[in-house]
Structures are given as C-alpha cells and as structure tokens.
Length: 142
Image 1 (tube, rainbow, N blue to C red):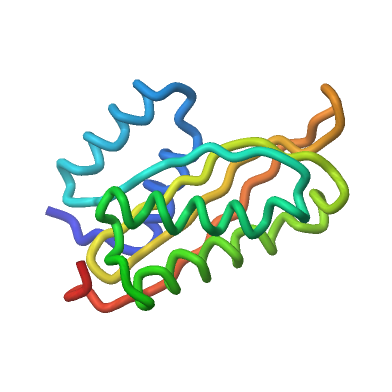
Image 2: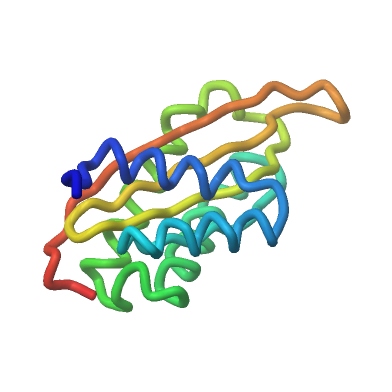
C-alpha cells in the first residue's frame, strides 16, 4: 500500500468540499474511510466578513462531531488554524460580497487539511474560489 501524504489528504478534503449532494458526500466519506482517512463536510453561506467567525466555528464543530479531531485545544486549534489559512487565500476576492459553498475536512494520522469551495458574488454574478490549508497534529490525538 502506498504511503498517504499531506497532498493526498488535501485531495481528500477537496473531494469532500466538491461533493454536490448529501449522498455524494456520504459516498465520498465512506470511500475515504476505507483508506483510514477521516473526513467531514459542512455547508455555509452569507456575507463574507461577518461569516468568517461562523465558518471557522462550523468547521471546528463538524470535525469534532464526526471524530476527525478531539474536542480539545489541539484539535480545535488545528481545524481553526487551517480554516483561517484557507479563508485568507481567497479573502481578497470575497470581501464585501456574499459567499456560499462547502468546507471539506480530511485527516490521516498527523495530516489535517481543510478545503473551502464557494461561489463569491452578488445575485447570479458569481466567481468561484477555492482555498486549501494543511496542519499537523500528533497522530496519537484522536
């Protein structure tokens, strides 16, 4: 079996963020689980700047509820930090506009990746943006 690396976990997080339906999300999650990759996805939307805190909170809560990270400062900090880093990559496109999309989170041992995929815009004049970030955390942390 090939070694799973951070780039593989980035792909897994992107797959979760790109899932179109709940069924697609569940199928993707089950496929990743067969490779011992933990994952979760969560939707979000709203005006970008006021939503940043809510997006980070949703990512942390989803990761904890699905057992991707432990409910402690190590797990919370890893998810919050990666989510913030992913948002920073696309903030210049989104400030002052509405956003809506999905956060994908994947973890394998010490590798944790957060991918954010969303539409940015006003009414139906949308741009598409993707942010992706990686964090490391001890593999002995659940």
